[in-house]
Amino acid sequence: MRIDIITLFPDMFRGPFGEGLMQRARERELITIRLHDLRAFSEDKHGKVDDFPYGGGAGMVLKPEPVARALEALRRPEARIILLTPQGAPLTQKRVNALSLEQHLILLCGRYKGIDERIRRRFVPDEISIGDYVLMGGELPAMVLTEAVVRVIPGVLGDSESALEDSFQQVLLDCPWYTRPEEFEGMRVPKVLREGDHAKTKAWRQQESEQRTRQRRPDLWEQFLAEKEA
Ligand code: 4GY
Image 1 (cartoon, rainbow, N blue to C red):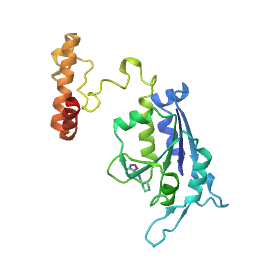
Image 2: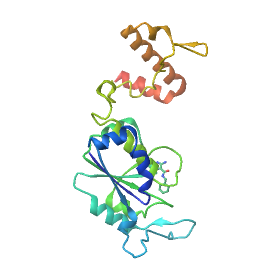
Image 3: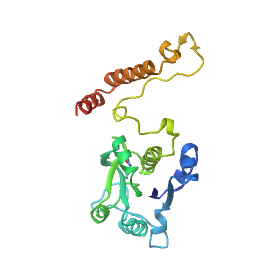
Image 4: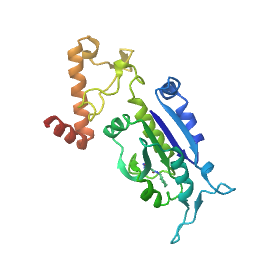
């Protein structure tokens, strides 16, 4: 898979994309990530990419021409163009899994008040939100989406912990995890986990996941019950 990212701040990505499993996935060419500075697609000598909003108001708007030039230069017939915005559809694990099957994603990161509306009309990007809060730009959301997608690409995690577990587990919250020592500040690791009975361990983890989900995320619990029914 190839991911092209269009941004005014390509350097923001180099830290997060240069560490851990993300770095390893890139080195092993399980993913190709290319960063593109939007300013390079500006047509004027000062590299101007923003302008005042029609109708007035505080803040600037990203001009359509540099964005259009970047998209025209990078897009191929099979590419999915994605705009990161609080106005988008919520990013879920389901959507992440679906995106991981694509060959080519182009992520468009807005800044200031956003991108001229005609870019949407012209390129009809998928619009995705990482949550109901407002950041200062689309860069962190693009990193979040990229990391979530790369995580489920086959070979990125070891196959014993491969990301696409059974279908229910995906909507439930994770169970508690323990490692050594067996006792820490008077608290012991649950007995069932120390006994080495794989079936009992599996049942305990499932029950803990269900209990946590019911208590903390009634919305996910309802979804779980509905999907179990279907
Ligand atoms: N939340 N999910 C988000 C965001 C910042 C104004 C366009 C989000 O995806 N993107 O908060 N983005 C805005 C700021 C310009 C991007």
